[in-house]
Length: 193
Picture 1 (cartoon, helix red, strand yellow):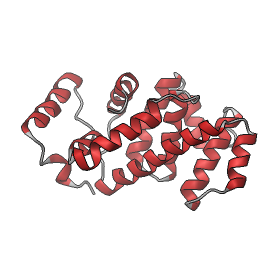
Picture 2 (cartoon, one colour):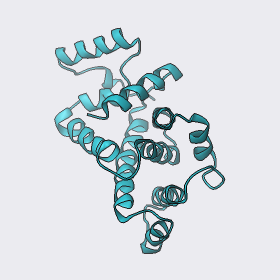
Picture 3 (spheres, rainbow, N blue to C red):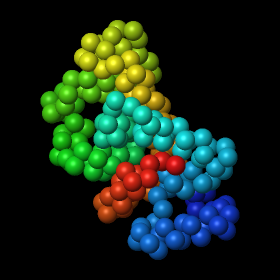
Picture 4 (cartoon, rainbow, N blue to C red):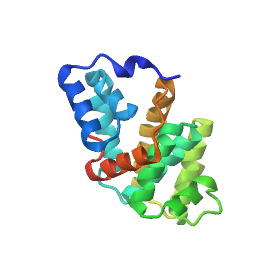
């Protein structure tokens, strides 16, 4: 059920910006973006900064890797909007949609490097069980991920565990494939700010 609150309560300048986005892109502004403008001082601005840092800040993980993590966390949380958005963004970042789809379909048999696979396994356990322990971290480190990469992956997980749950709580409307592609292009060009 879509919460209508995301369609109301914006200042005139924000409403104008929404209309311009629709005019120039041919696509409505996604609910994820609307949420960041609604009470931006309370949630939106801090969330944009945290998410931008997690997905576009300095990291040994590529942008594609981190977008894949976002899609994977969203898939485990069963958030259709976020899965669509971040599958499209990871696919565009990697320039390999079939590989992204294969990883999201079956992590264990997918064509993926061991450090990333082990990291995604750890994120999966964190989402399913609500915790990881020292043995889980040692497994990821033994697979070749650095301690900083583990921290970076946990930041992506935190951002999208929150975002995907908000997407479902607010009933974010799904986009068309063209809408997800336009969003992916925007996110790769501009990030999350």
